[in-house]
Image 1 (cartoon, rainbow, N blue to C red):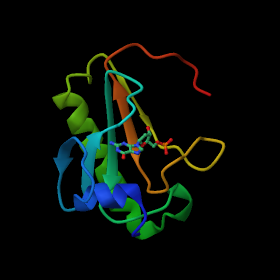
Image 2 (image 1 turned 180 degrees about the vertical axis):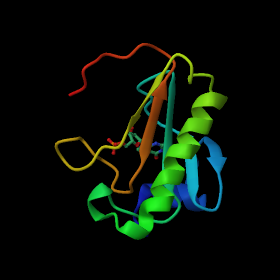
Image 3 (image 1 turned 30 degrees about the horizontal axis):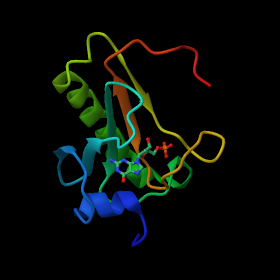
Image 4 (image 1 turned 90 degrees about the horizontal axis):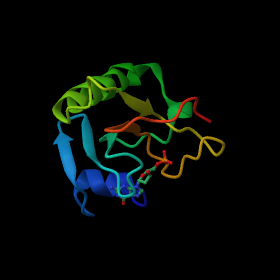
Length: 114
Ligand code: DGP
């Protein structure tokens, strides 16, 4: 998608603080962090949201979570705990329409959500 900001980050067309990249996903620090660690993990291919996932995307979505787990360990937030969020649609506040997993941690969070 030529006008998608996360596609541009994946391609390196706009700068970001990347923390991980492989053939399937890219992870970078959120520009507006909501926690001491706030990383976004996105598929390299454009997918608008959870609403348009197909069964072929299953391994890719599983990979997002494996990378999240590895990054949580690397950031040393795995033992204290962290939150993984996928906002979908208007009510959830999705602002970037390229599916992404938020990895948030580094401080206690309020619960419940919403
Ligand atoms: P969401 O509300 O789930 O769609 O969150 C989108 C997140 O993307 C939001 O926390 C801010 C972040 N974001 C938006 N534009 C950029 C950008 O250009 N660079 C980076 N690093 N993060 C961005």
